[in-house]
Image (tube, rainbow, N blue to C red; front, side):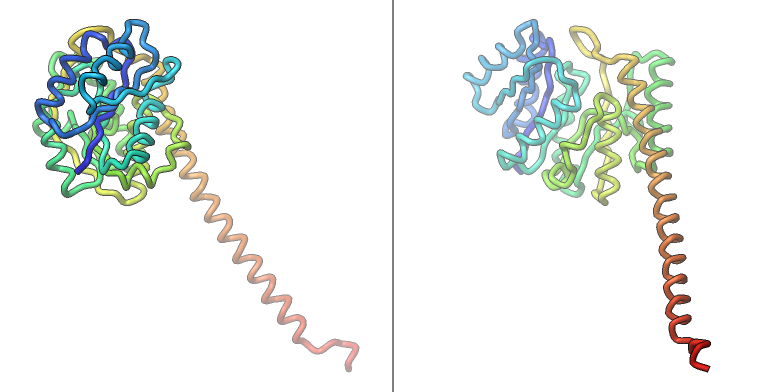
Length: 268
């Protein structure tokens, strides 16, 4: 299977070389696409240097910080255009341990999407505060049951998609970022009947640098779930109304037809 590992970067200059070294130690035959959002610390320049050293490392430069979701969308389009069979999502901060990459490749043999899960047996989030666990765990439970997503870790960003999945989703219509992006992709894949499986991971905090998580990203996730649920209810109600209107029109048409068949009073 020809695979592409997509890793968005913004100020990850300290992580990039050691991360790539570990990735290739576990999956030497994969290609890596670095999607850099014009990092002020020179991550993009370093990525170009590494590309010159290793042709398996590809680089996509963007003009500024455009968001995680759009970075993965750009990576998915690259994967489709260049004939890859599957595409990974992976953070560049070592919170997603490369040692799990072989587990993903094994699981994808019998699935369409593989998600690295913190919330199934074997998954774990060490050193998290109770508040952080409640926000993440509670958010996942909320999304799972509100939208009916058959996944324990809807917001996980460590994933592997088969080409058919990302081809079937209209990528230009995906607007979400952060948590919401991961929820939307899982929801849309599930809605189209693709098989989603989870593999356990231990999620570590980033080694260096600052977390890019924000209150805005968390709120966007909850908002997406509510909007999608509401839209689905409106659509369902609209279908019911449309069917009701159609039945009324059909009855009216039948009554009109019967009236035409009755003899006119003027004929008697």
